[in-house]
Image (cartoon, rainbow, N blue to C red; front, side, top):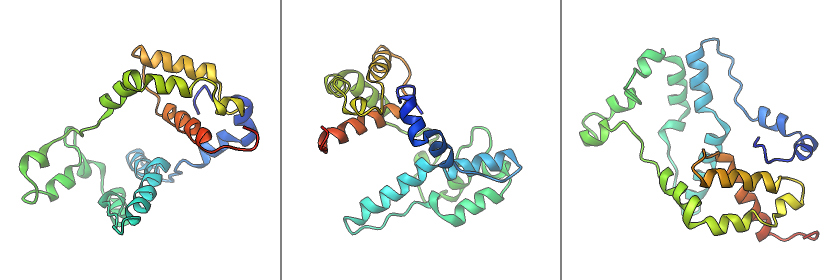
Length: 186
């Protein structure tokens, strides 16, 4: 867990055990298969799939993700690594399977398009006032969950070009949630 989580809070709720208990526990001896298992069954990926299914269902739509199909996962875990992927050939089998079905330029594209630079710019520039507002007078800090000073220090380093920690966003969303939902001790 991130350094701004107060140790006494983490100890009180057994956060280390919670984090460790949520990780996939592969039993394979082969390192490549074990790594593939961990990628397929990470808790974050599984939560994302559940969220997607529920979100789509609200609008009467079915969610289909071929990468989450159990048969595909079993196949990927059973096939030797060199058959699945080769250096420089990401998603090799999927790309081969899509030959003739997708435009060649799209099928051969190797890099994902991620909005990360836009997200970083928004956090560092456009939403800076909002973020600083969330990091000042923190309800999460008042409840003993987080160390507000450490969280602000991290954000300052991030704004100056430091690395992003994905768990920073969870701290912000916790703060937004606490501010939206008032409790008797607020």
